[in-house]
Image (cartoon, rainbow over all chains, first blue to last red; front, side, top):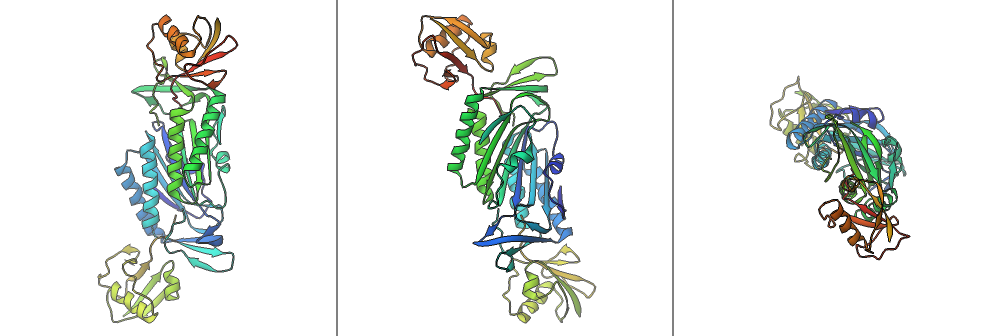
Length: 139
Length: 139
Length: 79
Length: 79
């Protein structure tokens, strides 16, 4: 499943969504707001989504991962709204019988979401400027 | 750093050990005790370590990961003693500027720890039997 | 016709607004997008941008009428 | 000499104890290990097993004396 949230991302709550007794492996990724980008000091940022399409496209990506990889459950949550340095922007979690598939599916979902899900990042810099981030190589 | 614990593994506390403001990527792996192995129903298990050598070898693996990959921090914690189905047996967390290195280092540490760190698993089965697990392909 | 256009992400900067009502003789997303580019002296980025009609992905050549809300999505930059 | 031997993981099963005191004419881990295998009719697995002396990794051919504690570690199965 894919969800959007305006709240702080809660690892423990999200992990429950993929937890099950047959899985031996759990791979997880968090994208953190970092304090620099392209040589500029970042103070905060704002994520905007097209909510309906973001959830649609995100759900398709997670469904595709469940087809492509030998995994048991997968979930991705993206935060929107105002975030501070250190906040979690995106969370991806995958449970599987074995570690190889868990890692591969987690990386697949992350890459696809970054490339395809209609969410956009506006960064605010120490010098007072702000800007929509074009291509996102942040994490 | 590499640590052993007899307590439940605490994701949030361990994540603090690798958290920093320059990292945009955090990759994490948990090995969960699953309810089956090689076709047998597992009810519980027990991990035994050679404490001194486990910590030494584990620390060398994490140090090597910090050399081999472009990452900022890494930590691995392995639980020892009695565990129940669903418990976290091993936790690996890596922070980095970018996601590729975070995933690669996390998988490297996990694979090396499973192969090299003197820790051994004794499984207990539903039929009353128990056995030291030989090669561990569990997660 | 007059058509409502919604802009997302950096396209709000490019075209100066979140939402605008556009007077046009054109009847498809591609021609309307090119009119906007010309008006704002902005480069054609239609290779990277995705059009939507009423919050659903559409082709650049779909025929529009005044009841539709047209939208333009720039490349994703989440994560 | 009499040497104390510590066994880990499944080697406890193979050799029946966690710790034992072994009477031997041998003076290195390899020969003592092979004596244990013979005594317990167990296959030589020295390719997979690591010897330690006083909780430190050692070579199979290190010379031992009675003050040493010898240990045998089976392959890791953590994770």
